[in-house]
Image 1 (cartoon, one colour):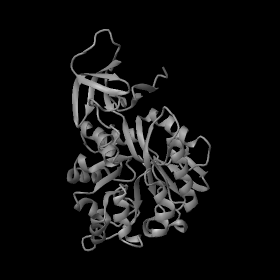
Image 2 (tube, helix red, strand yellow):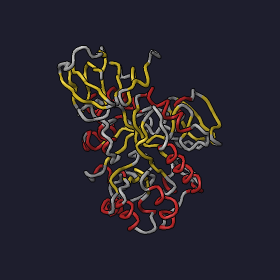
Image 3 (tube, helix red, strand yellow):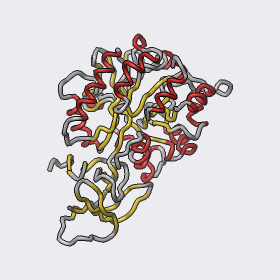
Amino acid sequence: MFYLQGDVLTDGQLIRNQVIEIENEMITYIGDTIRNKGVDVITVENGYICPGLVDIHIHGIDGVDFMDKGRDTWETITEHLPRYGVTACLATSRTAPLPDIQDFLDRATAFTKKDHHGTRLIGVHVEGPWISKSYCGAQDTSLIRSLTWQDVKEVLSPYFSLISKLTIAPEEVQDPTILSYLHSQSIILSAGHTNATLEQMEEAIESGISQITHTFNAMSPIHHRTPGTAAAALYFDLLLCEVIADGVHLHPAIIQLLYKIKGAEGIALISDCTGYNHLTEGEYVYRGRELIRRGGEVRLKNGSLAGSAITLVEAVSYVVKHCGIPIEEAIRMATEIPARATGTTMKIGRVQPNYRADFVVLTEDLEVNTTWIGGLQVYNVSGN
């Protein structure tokens, strides 16, 4: 048993000078007094104790992608993420040949059976290849396909217990009842890389669509006569909106608009990091693709954004400093809200009794100082 003491950001609140009791990987008490004298107390000064960040859309970090073939790929990513404050994530795939998607799911299955001390894998997020060629973004159009019952049976169904989230273009599904079936299997359905109209989105919501993948990016736009998916994101209260807050994918005023309409409850901050956060300014050939890194963004030679190059903690900092979103709400949009959006039964995303002792300690400038997973310190900026 030990105690953490300091200012706590959780549940949309800043609670000053709290004492958190940790025992057997869990939070057993939070309040303003130390219940057991003689127990170690770690005091956090000039910063905030927050729930560990939860990234529900991340492809990789520090040059490594979950779909890379290296033997220790998954271990490397989950060991690196704590330095960025991420204590839980959904490993996210990209459009690829179906055997590669199956390999990704096989490797995820194998990883879940191993003991490791890094970021928790709470499931996987399958993004593509069942999307629209009209809004492919950086995805390979030659690999994009409609979702069929055969694909459901052969590619997805063996991994239903592993797949938490599926990004899909609802208008490209061969049979609308496929969506209802996947929803019945407790898979979160998210509309992304889609050319759906508002009317098609309304039908998809009735079949189980409940989220929007990287809102406003790679989707049919808002138009005053033919409103598309972007309009549906604003119009339907039910839809949870992923947001890449890097100053590249969205103008800060658009993030402010989304926040005014949806509130913190309707937004999950994501990184959508493709592992290119490690690249400096310049031109590269990476995973067989020509990339250009300039001014905080990574693009293909054709100009398409190739995911993002930020981390989730940078997204939190961005919305606080550039979008006027209160820090209490920004933290919630990167912890409690995305955790809930995965449907996980794991008690994460809040600093409350009976929740897992997963914390990130942020400096007053919103940089990661220390990360704890299950009551163990797994990262310290000083290296101690």
